[in-house]
Image (cartoon, rainbow, N blue to C red):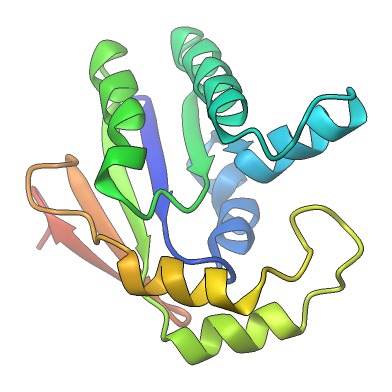
Length: 165
């Protein structure tokens, strides 16, 4: 069954690392907002135009789901309203939806952010106030929002939601 994995977490909470470590295991393609921004920049488009970036994220995910592929959506999705497009996509394409919630302490995210190389888009340091604001305003996935919720903390993974013991 094709699955849509929607990553939810603050910057530097481990989303991209998790995506790259699990894509082959899950047999899923990664659609990353950072990669779309890189592609926009190299194509002369504005990588900071969030509406355009996420329209392209949605288009890429839709194309993959239409071709019967599982997809990992790698972006913060920290507000419920920012992930409604993903839930709609999953339903439209009869894909199982799994929220992968990265529940890391703020200090872990801030420390990882300071270790970024500041050279590569997606690996650039995020202003500390943005990391803090996203972390503070993050809305965890709620019951009924997704078919399943997977909670990632540190190196451990726990599950919540339907059909999970």
